Amino acid sequence: MRLLHRSLSMLILLMWFFWLPAPRAQSTPGSSISNARALDGLLQEYAYRPLVRPKTGIPYDGVVPADLAGIKIAAMRLRSGSMYRYGVLKPTYKEFKIPMGVTASPYVLRLVLVYQNLGNRSSEYYPLPGYTHLTPVLGLRAYDAANLSATDIQELNITATRDPISIKFVDVKSVPDGAVAKCVWFDLHGSHNFSNVTSGNTCLTIQQGHFSIVVESIAVPPPPPTSISPTPSAGTPNAGPRPSGGGKKNNNSKVGIIVGSVLGGLGLLVLLTFLVLWTQKYKREKKMQQMERAAEGGEALHMTTVGNTKAPAATVTRTQPVLESEYAP
Image (cartoon, one colour):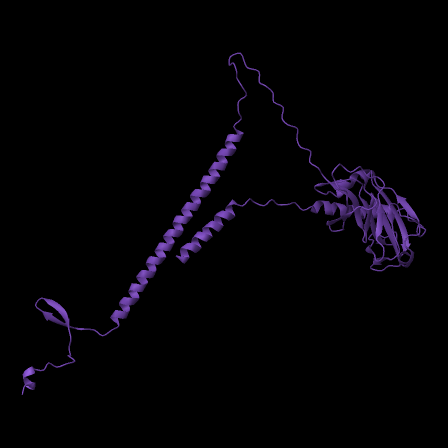
């Protein structure tokens, strides 16, 4: 019985597993990450071109090629020690305000901060399913400035160790009613993180990357279908629209799936029941064989012939018969 209960439990689990909906595979934005990384390298190359004899702490605007129209870039060379002690002396570097205590790793004597404003190309390179960009995506990247004419420029990481870096967005779309605007930060590996918006249009960060203000997309419900009364034809009065057979096919397919699942479950149950009964019969036969072997292993009885029949007979009697007359006085 315990084996039967286990089999029934296994059958229930299998049926429950097959009735579960199949999980949908979520596509990873691998192509978007590779495109964004390739764009960083290209924008760095064009941002370095105006840095012929740059002055420290002065931003230089760059020009992008025609196929990247709508994107704005700039570059500013700084000393690592001065950036840590004083930050950026000007109030802001474009929309970024860089305070004191910002360090670069690995350490270099001079570095270049490349500014990016992706404009109307923001959703193309940094898509965020389920959200809508209220601002262009702004980027801040750090590179080595040891050789401004080199082709393979080393990438750096900057971290704010005291006050955070603030990004004050200028071009912000209005937030839809009932929605909440959020800051989003995209790192260099395709991950993103949300935070609260401060002062209506400002985001805070302690690392470099790309930033934007987003809001959850609100799906607009489709308009209700308009009922159009069909015009009856001359030959068939009161003729209405013919029902399509799509719904009937779907219903038939669902009924077929349900019936097939039930029949399959019943077949599996019958198979398990037959297996349990066969196991019990096998155990009984094995037990009878053991009893027969135990009986055959005992002392064999002496057989004697009585007429035409053989019968067991004892070879030795334990008590000899005694006549009563022998004890008579």
